[in-house]
Image 1 (cartoon, rainbow, N blue to C red):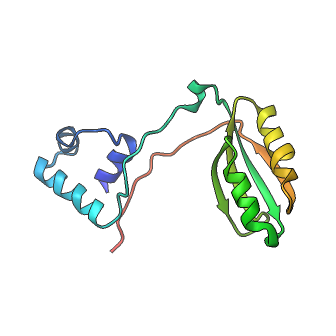
Image 2: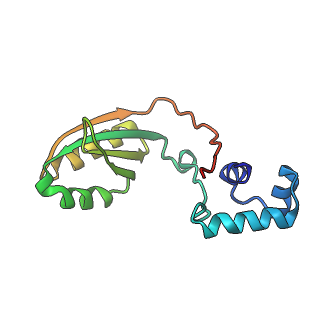
Length: 144
């Protein structure tokens, strides 16, 4: 849907500019956005922080295996870490995938091996340092 794609690119766009860019009437744009909010498709508007400009230039993903008996404690400890941006419980080779940001690759390496690796119940941790990133422009389609 064109409205979702436009808002995904810039959530701060005004409704008049959005309607003009999409070639639709202002009231139509407004009512479609309200409908998307009511349906729960748009949950909230947010900002994207440029962490590179804050000195957080290193990014990594950690795959973690854990003892299920210690799951809650491990999740709680990881979520307390300043470098953690996202934690996912997954199936496959790892139990958890953790996205991290820091000032250096060394800082992230230490976060995984010296902090996460020492949490009771963490069985294995593997770090994948980011060397490049590409973010696609998402085009949304509503399913009936």
